[in-house]
Amino acid sequence: MTEYRIALIPGDGIGPEIVNEVIKVLKAIEQSSNIQFHFQDFPWGATNYLRTGSVAPDNFLEVLEPYDAIFLGAVGHPDVQDFISIGKLIFGLRKGFDQYVSYRPIKLLKGASSPLKKDWDIDMLFVRENKEGEYGDIGGRAYLGCDKELALQVALFTRFETERVMRFAFEQARLRKKHVTSITKSNALKHSMIFWDEVFEEISREYPDVRTDRMLVDAAAMYMILEPERFDVVVTSNLFGDILTDLGAALQGGLGFAPGANLNPERKFPSMFEPIHGSAPSMAGKGVVNPIAAIWASALMLDHLGQKAWADRVIRAIEKVLVEGKVRTPDIGGKSTTSEMGSAIMEQLPKC
Image 1 (tube, one colour):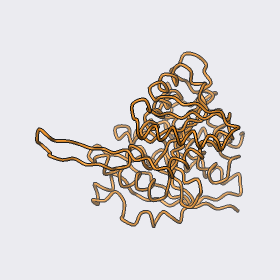
Image 2: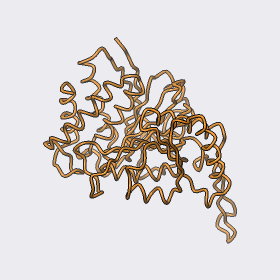
Image 3: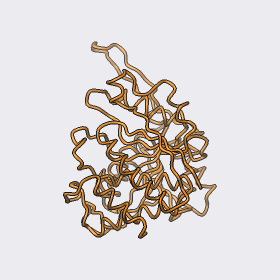
C-alpha cells in the first residue's frame, strides 16, 4: 500500500465545494488501486482572518511540512484585502517551501470549447518563476498625501533562481516537443530582462537538443491568439507569467479549466496544487461552479507524487465527460451542478 498525506486548505467562497469534488475523485482512485490518501483539513484563509484576526497560524509552515502535498481550494473575501489573505498564505507557502516553479499547463481538452474559431492545437506549458521578479516585495512609499508622494516597487532577479527555473523548463521540454520560448520585455527593461536573456542563452547551451526562441511579452500575447500552436514550453518571469497564463486560461475554455501547481521540484518540501480561479464568493453554496480545474489540479498532484498513470486516467475521465456532453456546468452551457460534474468524472475513472 502506497500512502500519501495530503494537507487540504479549502479556503474561502467556492473553495470547499470544489475540494469536495477532488476528494471524491481521489477516494475513487483508492477503491481501484493500492493507493491510500490521508487527508487533513486546515480552515485557513480570509474567512479565518475575519474570525480570528489571522489568515493562518504563525507556525503554518511547520504544521504543513510533514505532508506529501498541499491542495488549495481558493482564497479571498471581499472584506479582506488580497495582500493580507494571499500575502501570508500563498506567497508564504511559495517562499517558505521553496516552490520556485509555477507550473501551468495550457491545453484544450477534448470536448472543451475555445473562443478561437479554428481548431488550433492548444497545448503549451508555462513555467513561471514563482518567488522573486516583480513580486519580490521590495519597495515602499514615501511622502504620503503630498505632491511629492511616491511609490517604488523593485523587481529582483538573481542568477540562482533564474538559472534553476530555466533548467526546469528545459527538462520539461525534453519530455514534450523539445522547444522552449523565453518571454521578456528586454527592449524596454534594459537591466532585469537583458540579464534574463543572457542567462537563457547560457542555459540553452546545456541543452543542444532543445530548440529555443525569444519573444517580447506583447508579441507573445498576440501569438497566443493568432498562432497558439507555435508554443511548447514557455519560461518567463513572475509578472508576465501571471498575466499570460490567465490569457491561456481563456484559450483552454475559461477559468473552470485552468489548473496550477507551485512546485518544489526537488521534493525537499511539499508542493501546492490548486485551480487558479478565485474564491467567487457570490457563487458560493449554489452548486454551479465547474470543478474541472480543481480535479485537473489533483491530476498534477498525482503526477508529482509519482502516480502518472492515474494522473493520465483522471484527464481521460474529464475528457470523456466533456465529449459525451451529458453533464455540463453553467459556464460551459449546461445546467449540471458542481457535484454532478465531479460524480460524472469519478464514474468514468474505471473505464479509463
